[in-house]
Amino acid sequence: MQLAINGEFVEVPDSCRTIRELLAHLRLDGKIVVVEHNGRILNKNEHDAADLADQDRIEMVHFVGGG
Image (cartoon, rainbow, N blue to C red; front, side, top):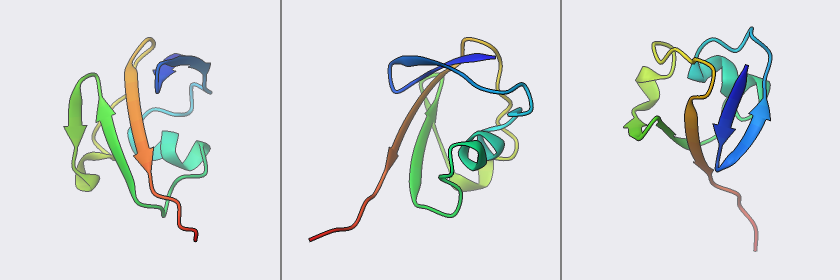
């Protein structure tokens, strides 16, 4: 399946059926991530219910510590 992630088209496995599964695939699960799915910002508790489809638009922002 092809998704537009942060403006770039990326091929992801069809096993990524939800936002939560996509975050796990991208190794972002367990991190603080703000996700917009097709123009709608999701609450964290919506990640399991947000189904993905080919050509969906995903915008993600995650926080990185440093100093």
